[in-house]
Image (cartoon, rainbow, N blue to C red; front, side, top):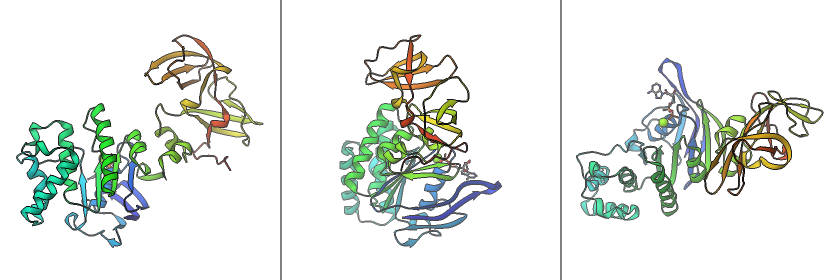
Length: 349
Ligand SMILES: Nc1ncnc2c1ncn2[C@@H]1O[C@H](COP(=O)(O)OP(=O)(O)O)[C@@H](O)[C@H]1O
Ligand SMILES: [Mg+2]
């Protein structure tokens, strides 16, 4: 599947996607992630054929599908709001597309019960959507896609309407489903944790422009710019505007000694992941503003007397309390540096 230079401009000049180029491998789980309004749904809808590109071509397999109707593309889309038929049973919801396609009754029965088996909802086939929980409705929506055996599954924020616990459960179910079916899945979300856990590869989109396409760990370890660095990871990467003079790093907004880096003199954005901040030991003096105890870790919010603020991820046994005076290390060796426009400085050979 591929996008070749796809641009979408809506009336009144709203550009939802700019010159999008991407090849998606067969069987890949590709996640498109970005803030609300960045063009994720539009991208997916152009793959489904619900929206037409302003320019560029869309391919499914080797076929140019750019002008084809949704029904003539072998894809199945799962929406955030499920879009079930309220007056139909679960069985009929799942059977609908197959009936429209003129499949035999035996084939429909076979496919629906197979999908119900995969999703563990054999017992729900006679119910109507209003008698289902949110998670069950979501499963029906997925089941409706499975029965069609599409070349690709398109998911548009399918878990957004679920509560936190169910979201995690459905997330792992989707990962298992992908492993079991081996199908190509394109999954759109604003949630970076979903992107990181589900994606073979992740596309980060901002204002319709691709920022980076990479595997999850590469995205985390080598974000190409300050936007990606700040978007991927929670708590977010600490960012400081700094000046580098003869190798010494000084924050612009507060007095502190942030160590040394092998950089030409100039101004940069320095980013340090919360887990790379060391609390205790050698470093700059800071006070603990807030401690969040999460069981498996503690998130500690810190401030220096000079007004520098940052977040550290510590072990749960770390005994800091609000108001404590501590010392903090921001190791320049683990820091990410970006130029003033936000582009990553390539320091690593
Ligand atoms: N039918 C439409 N008409 C005009 N503008 C639209 C339409 N659909 C989406 N947009 C605009 O295109 C941009 C991208 O929208 P969308 O793809 O829905 O973003 P996302 O799914 O990432 O939240 C937004 O600015 C949105 O307002
Ligand atoms: Mg959307």
